[in-house]
Image (cartoon, rainbow, N blue to C red):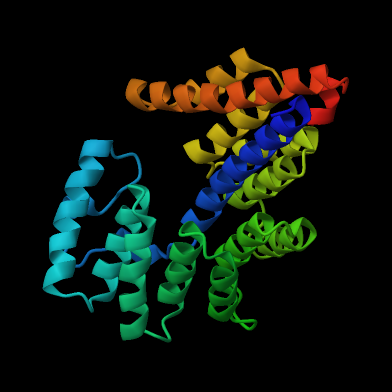
Length: 275
């Protein structure tokens, strides 16, 4: 493979990975308030999945799966089961679960939104876009759906349309950190890292910003070559286990970017071209 082809391959790989990060963050916001779930069919230990370790997620998957087997038409159980399956990387199975839930609840807006999330995570982007658009209602617009729609459009390479959706989300929910972060990630996909960092930093300064938003800032900072600063951001406010995992992932991503930059140098292109 020539240096030019390796450069293109590295760039494409980075773009796909960044797009996946964007999609995961955006679609996580699609979950409704009902996702906290108080139904007795689901063990209370599974009420909050964020921040669980791999072992805890596997245990939650088993317990919620058993509840789903007992009553596959239960709306909340199906939503939660699809969520935990997605978090453990079983996107095809999560989509199959949501297909059953949407059959039982075909007009439920939150179910349709979760179905769109499952489609997108499984790589069915065009179908996901149609489902998310069908979930939205012009008289009562949901900023989460605008943000999710933007994430899918970014994955499809339609960045101008995506950013319009993010701004519509911000008009509905001003200063929402996940949307600001998504907008920043959109600029990462187009290679404008400085603009991306501006949005990311604004997002992290919002009171509701969570660790996912801060990890995206770490990624953008690292992609600009400020590796130590990126690792410091990645380690903040996390357990040691989470911090180690995030830094390992960050180093992997930055290693790809570093290889990309070296290849650019060999081709006689300035490093700024990677931005």
